[in-house]
Image (cartoon, rainbow, N blue to C red; front, side):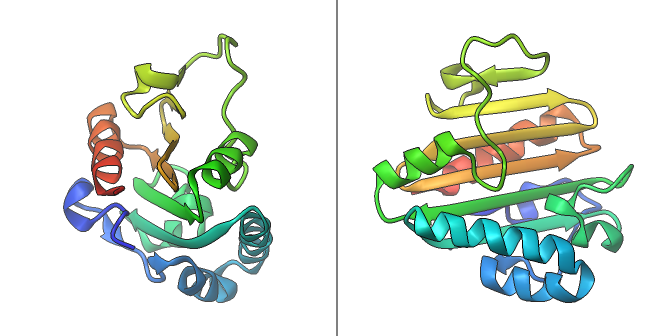
Length: 173
């Protein structure tokens, strides 16, 4: 699944974490480093499979390896970037999963004025999208065709966030 953040898509100084790639391989690597997170994500994956998910991949990059076993690479003051892409059997399944929230990343309530949150076309990621941009965390979730993507950056600037989301969006075919 070449739909993820690639090394050239993230700022210099971030190194790819072990287990990046197919989601099943990531879960296997995570079982040793962070068993409780591996269990939580494994349960989430099973729920997505019941909703029609066919495949998933994850890419994690961090300035320090200790962030590699944290949830989507987020760990304190360490710079990190992560992308997760889930492929579904059809667009309807993908849309329903995006609306319900993938791994807990559910769209904010439409019309709610939450600081740092933008929803819909204004994100630049299409109508089925939302972003959260409040330092130190920047997060995007969107659906494109049969894919649901999540990009999370920690302790990185808005330019890196925009570049990362644009790169993942361009990889989604």
